[in-house]
Image (tube, rainbow, N blue to C red; front, side, top):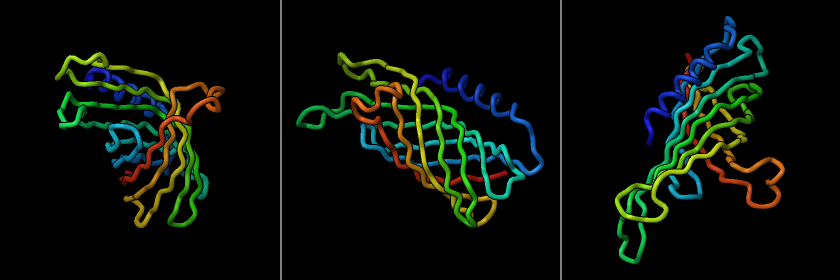
Length: 186
């Protein structure tokens, strides 16, 4: 994983989110998550930072979210489960989301843009060795549960694709992932 790219992206997203006007009741939230998807590597984790835009609105929630996800697994080839290197996939992006507060449950939807990188380890001389990066868009739907105001568990389903919107009907929708996590609001 290229640490310089990650650090630059994190600082840029934090600066962008810091320019959002301050409201008296607006909040920041930081979260961590466990993520499951169908493509390899299948399991990963994520972190996210969220900034509410309408802190004074009692029912409507609008927010900006920066997110980072990391997936890693050993690449096994052959009948003897020989390891040929580690496969890593990470992505980061920014999204706008909107939702409503319905008591303890707050459903939301969102749309965003980001960058994803796929890297194959260099433990063997394989033709696919190296890394590949691309821009993507994502759409997601989820819900937060607020048993106490500071801690908010959430569940989310995200679809991510590097295709143009017009080309989506011609092939598969992209890759989806199920996300379980928790926010801490401050």
